[in-house]
Structure formats: C-alpha cells, structure tokens
Image (cartoon, rainbow, N blue to C red; front, side, top):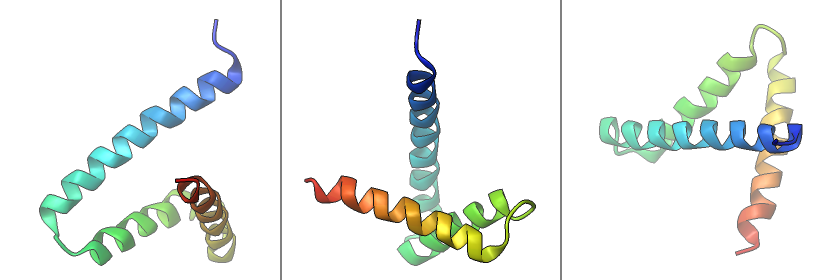
Length: 75
C-alpha cells in the first residue's frame, strides 16, 4: 500500500504529464515561447484568484521557481 507521500507524488506526476501534454499542444498553436509562458502563468493566477491576492500568488510562483532552479541546476 502506498504512503500518503507516495500518493501525493503520483498525483503530482499525473498532473505534470498533463501539463507537458498541454504545453506541446500550445506549441502547435503558437510558436512564440513568450505567449505560452504568459498563458501558463495566467493559468496559475486563475487557479488561485478566488482565494489569494496577486502578491501572494506571485510569491507562490517564485517559491516554485526557486525549487525548480535547484532541481534543474543539479544537471
């Protein structure tokens, strides 16, 4: 039986796979990376906008970016 932590990770991985599929679909609509980047950021703001203010959402994004930077910097 999977632990709650393992279940959380599996849920995350399913969401990540879906997000990468969406990104590939978006590339077929617009070749401009900036359009795709901004649209994905808008989706994050839309996800949280009913519960959090823009400054708090920005802090969440920044925290995730710091974590991703550490992960991708490992090589």
